[in-house]
Image 1: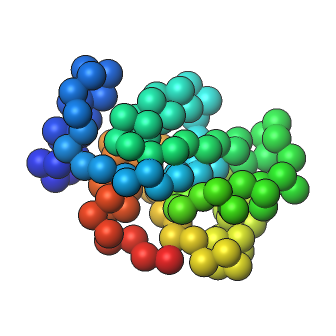
Image 2 (image 1 turned 60 degrees about the horizontal axis):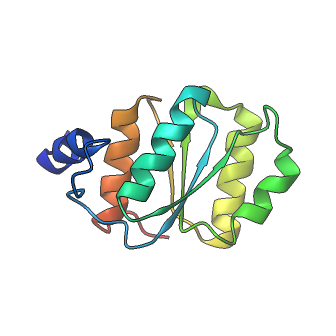
Length: 126
């Protein structure tokens, strides 16, 4: 993890200003571990972003997923925490709406921090 990612991780919950800025971007997270959602929301908001979550079809209807893309500037999803069908739907919607997406290979918080850092640095393009 980069030094920025380490600093950002350390600032979570400290009330310290984050080391990178999402500049008001809206981040849609699809799937993931239920216990991470509140932490992800707080982290994105601390990094000056807007957080939206869809559970990937576990309890929420997949038909409602498309409605969230109007607000999203980027989409993150942990590949081990959503079905292949849900992954396919997310990728299709990202291409249709020209949204950058990051399929996270790990579902831990460090993976989300690295993806958010990439977005803040402009390394993810639509």
